[in-house]
Figure 1 (cartoon, rainbow, N blue to C red):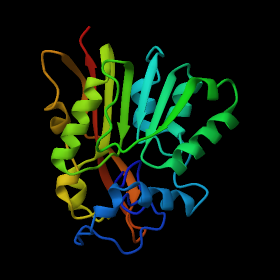
Figure 2 (cartoon, rainbow, N blue to C red; figure 1 turned 30 degrees about the horizontal axis):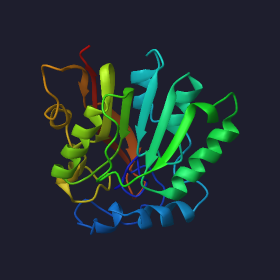
Figure 3 (cartoon, rainbow, N blue to C red; figure 1 turned 30 degrees about the vertical axis):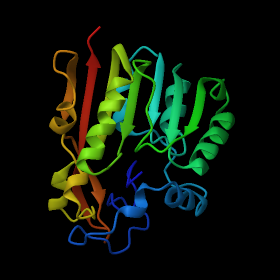
Figure 4 (cartoon, helix red, strand yellow; figure 1 turned 90 degrees about the vertical axis):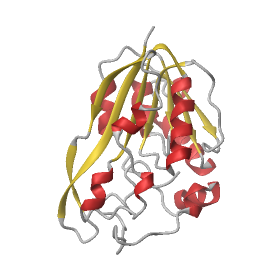
Length: 237
């Protein structure tokens, strides 16, 4: 999926972002394909840090474990972190290479992690998760064109059982006003209100709707303050 989980090319966190700036408008077509992401994962032994996304840790650390769906699971850091805390986790990613790598890392993690994780390759643009199945549905830095993103968020919300939680995290549009190196595709960044808009207010309670800041580095290595979108909601029982 497009520039997700703090993709170093667009996050201003170093990596190999090169000279990409928000004044440039890249062709995003390839970023939606399994082929692109399979090649990306094959190109290196580790695309991501191996650490869980900090907003997942902040929002879920004290939640009673149950069943979880991690969408855009990548190399498995979030799913493995959840499983280590007693969650039964299904990790879904467009890349078969990522899914295989995540399963290997879960097996290496020990303490029954592999037994509490299931991995699935799927085209998330068309994939339909099981309805009202999970106590937690989590998606971090899954950036798609507006209508496609809204449809995905509706499907993810539909996978949350009564009393369960939806956690969506992404890059905030205000990052385009900085030198962080986001691609000049404003429609693919989103606000908490845009996520909340797909939820039926009668069925959902918004626990967190925020745009916390964090310090990063732009493609030239300069310090920059960026903002994340965080929407944490619970389906009313």
